[in-house]
Length: 293
Image 1 (cartoon, rainbow, N blue to C red):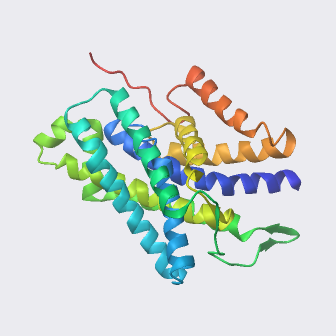
Image 2 (image 1 turned 60 degrees about the horizontal axis):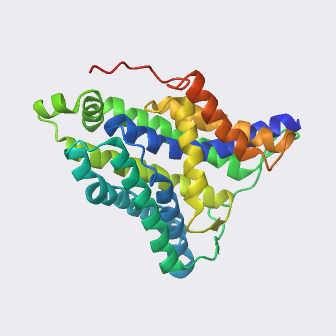
């Protein structure tokens, strides 16, 4: 029974990783960019909820959509200001990576100046009674995390595969030059991708704050890195792969804390990244693609 409980708790934590990993995998799938500033969008979402609910005293039904919209706008702004000129001029990957790190440091320090460095306590966001299955009891936060992440993945799959903008995203991912010749505004597609990925990060921030009711400017660092590991684990560039990687990573982390050591959890997580890169660099559901020279 304890083992099953650890599995469910791991899926609840993995749901948060999965939502963040989706943002990584979408941006990478379109522009081949590892946006290491993506973890800090989670921090932005958390602080927006804190500002709206705690400082302004507004209800959660206003805080949730406002946080999602602000994070989506932040993602679009970051793409427009920091990345677009580099992408247009086909800048080296290392230049994009350094820029992403710079954006991450900027966001963290900006929020330190505005809100201070002390952790802030969050109010309860989604209060619900524990779910009972016979003698087994599930925490409401765990159930909410799993249900929301599954809904988000289904919605994202429908968006990508059934809508006009989704098909434009696929075309841009396959060949941006050919997409331009077909009349697709690739800049708008890229901006939209950043917006959707950042909106998913805002949802992850809401789930994270509901599970762990504390925020601080550096909260996105480790969470973002673990989500990146999840994206690589599942197959970066694959939406189902990002979800699978997030769930598996959450379960592995939960089992490691329960049966190995709480202090070795992060070492195990990043050890998995090394093993995956050595054994199967494309990830579980990723595809090896040959690049023409």
